[in-house]
Every structure is written in C-alpha cells, then in structure tokens.
Image (cartoon, rainbow, N blue to C red; front, side, top):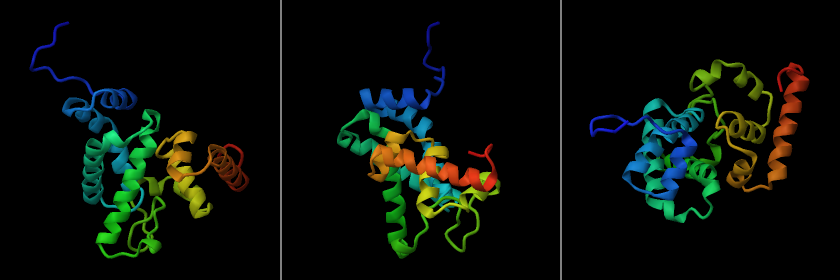
Amino acid sequence: MPVSGTEVALPLGEQEAVERFLDAPGEDSFRELFRATAPRVARYFRTRGCDRELAEDLTQEVMLTVFSQIGRLRKKELFRPWLFKIAKNALLQHFRRSGREVATVDLDPGRHESGGVPADSLAGSRFQEWMAWLEPDERRIMTLRYVEELEYHEIAELLEIPIGTAQWKVFHSKRKLAARFGEGTA
C-alpha cells in the first residue's frame, strides 16, 4: 500500500528502533528510538524516587546525550547498558546539582527521595515487598533484570562486573526470596 505524506507510521519495537538508529543515526531514526526507549528510561528514574516531572526532564537529558554521543558507543549490542549508564550519571549529576550528598542518595528503586516513601505503582506490588528482604546490591541487580529487563551481559556491562557474577547474584537473590516467600516466588 502506498504511503502518503499524511499517514502516521506505527512506532517501531524497541529493538528495531535501536537497530535503525544505530545503523543510520538521524532525526527520523532518533524519533523512533525516543518513542521506543524513553518510557523505559523514565521508569528507571521513577523507580529511583523521581517525581514524574523530574523523570521526564532527566529522560530528555539522557536522550539528548544519546543523540549527541552515539559515535562513542563501541559495540552496538551494548546499547542498553550504555543508555542506562547515561541515565545513572544523569541522576547522580542531578543530585550533585541539587546539593545532595551522592554517598547518601538511595539509588535503589521504590524509595522516594525524602523519607523512604514509595515512589510509584511498583511500590504497592509484591515486588517491593520482596525487594525489602534483599540487600541494596541485590535489589539493584534484581531491578535491572526484572524491572529494566536487561540481559545478563547488559547488567554485567552496566555494573562493570563479570557476566558470571551478574548471573550468580540474580540466582542467589532468587534463592533468598524463594526461601522467604516460597518456591513459586522465584
């Protein structure tokens, strides 16, 4: 079917959008990339205590960085870890600019910046109940795996740990949760 200038293209899936942008970075491919990945980036910020407006602002900042720095990405298959490293850095920079001590910032999900109040709808889920039983590093890796839906090699790249360590930490955390909440949990 011929495409007229007035028809709106359907958004591409995330992987297709990433591949298209990596193959031919430009305004059109970036627009599709933004549509496909910005909600995930915003969720990253929301699960770390940012209100909706701040999450949207930081997402815009991250996506602008992606657009301007795409030439620095060495391996295309590591796009998502690279994206989340940029997001992590943007969040840390935000805290520095706002005068908060980075060492005291809880980068774990589900905690509001002021006083540990849950940040969004994830807080009411069983996931938050389970995460409360894990150590901060375990919560972080489980969030990357099951909320951000990163693959093990992406987690390893993002956290700068061996892939086997990433796999072991997820396995260990799942066993810990299964022992606490029952076999059907993990």
